[in-house]
Image 1 (tube, rainbow over the protein chains, first blue to last red):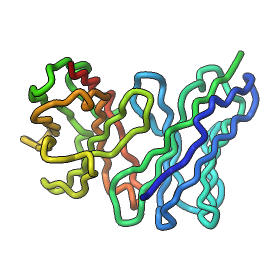
Image 2 (cartoon, helix red, strand yellow; image 1 turned 180 degrees about the vertical axis):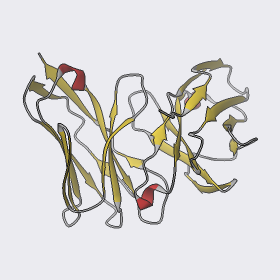
Image 3 (cartoon, rainbow over the protein chains, first blue to last red; image 1 turned 90 degrees about the vertical axis):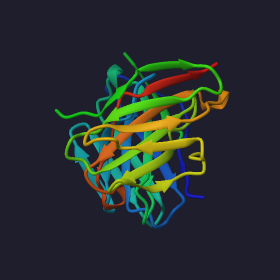
Image 4 (tube, chains in turn green, yellow; image 1 turned 60 degrees about the vertical axis):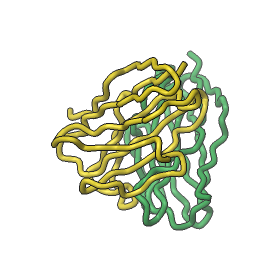
Amino acid sequence: QKEVEQNSGPLSVPEGAIASLNCTYSDRGSQSFFWYRQYSGKSPELIMSIYSNGDKEDGRFTAQLNKASQYVSLLIRDSQPSDSATYLCAASPEGFQKLVFGTGTRLLVSP
Amino acid sequence: EPEVTQTPSHQVTQMGQEVILRCVPISNHLYFYWYRQILGQKVEFLVSFYNNEISEKSEIFDDQFSVERPDGSNFTLKIRSTKLEDSAMYFCASSLGPSGAGETQYFGPGTRLLVL
């Protein structure tokens, strides 16, 4: 069973702080990883993708991938109340086209 | 900016009825997907479609489900005889290439299906 695990939260951070979201995956052959943001009642919206070990930065967001530990993370710097949402981690298992999603981590950023 | 569109946004149906959910993927994308999300649960893969045929499907995608690309733009999901447990948000997604190769899947706004 190919699974992606996330802490459901909520993760509460004050405005301006760094939010750290974590994800582990079971399929060692997974090559591509995606972070999506989902507001309540809305569809997943891509934040970042990452395929190589190490860090990838895009504005206030940094994704980190450690394939040896089967671990993906997302850092959000200078968190804003508008960042309050559920963050979904997804992996694409090797040889497959589908995405396997975690349950998501709910982030609450307080003003 | 190109986007995936879905109709209807909401659908209420009686148990046992057939429903068709419609999607227009991004125009130059080649891979099409359906996912569902039961309220409060994770997004679950149903099926992927490439080159006019199903390329992957999950255990959820049983004989009650079918997909079709009837023309060059639409991609549909049909549920033949709906059950109460089919009540969920159904998302269509599309990508230029396979996600295993790093291509991003872009999601439509979803159709909320309620089976009474």
